[in-house]
Length: 323
Image 1 (cartoon, rainbow, N blue to C red):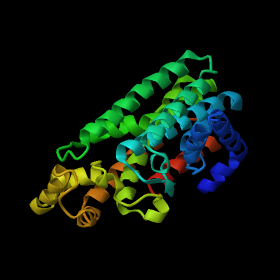
Image 2: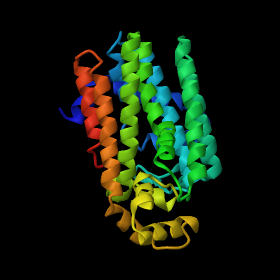
Image 3: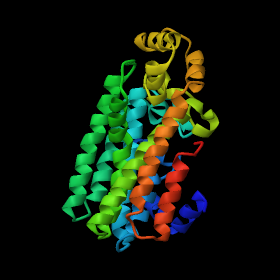
Image 4: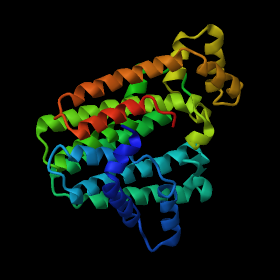
């Protein structure tokens, strides 16, 4: 099985979701329309819609309801990216200029707000109160994760526990509820919905850890953004936390000097090379695989179907990918 095979099997429904994404953010305000479509037109993995659709097969598959969940979650994800790029002062994403770089911070912030609003409008069409309760709770945690990240910028004294809490809120929860809500709106049993949530959460944690490694070791042309962007912006990820706790005194001092000066002192290129050669990289990847194993255990609680096999393959792909 290839990842393209999974996308191909859901091609028609994913195409419908892509259409609905564009339709949902349509507006007569031309500048807002162009800024809103800017990130959408750059494409993306569409992992959250994919999870929603696959989860929907464990109940009564109804695209009319699944697409509302899928569109809403993908728009929420997009909105957070637009806001993140303002906070991080990022110039590129997915190989093209960010909204804030193409326009300015004000347009970017209002664009993110607009996309958020359209996401909530889309999911309002679902009558099950559980959907709205789960989504609202997840959004609260998502914002808390963003605030945590702001507080943690350039902070050298961070723990594994703090890091795990942050990525749970920023990344894993949205993937978890993609699987959970796909099951709920399809009428899957409570035990299946719990297993889907457990899978999505664990895969989301593994996804972010792998992302944090790729930010340091990946190819800029493949990533669509400069390598080392996290550290450049003061975001201290697990490979860096590990070397700050376990590296030599000279290594720790070099990174601390960079962080405590908020990036004004020290050679970032040298620091990135040092982190890439440290035990922080294999440590983070090993922890990512532990979360993958938890996801695979959750899958064993699901019916043995083609969709379960697809979820297994996606999880394994996430921890071995290069982009």
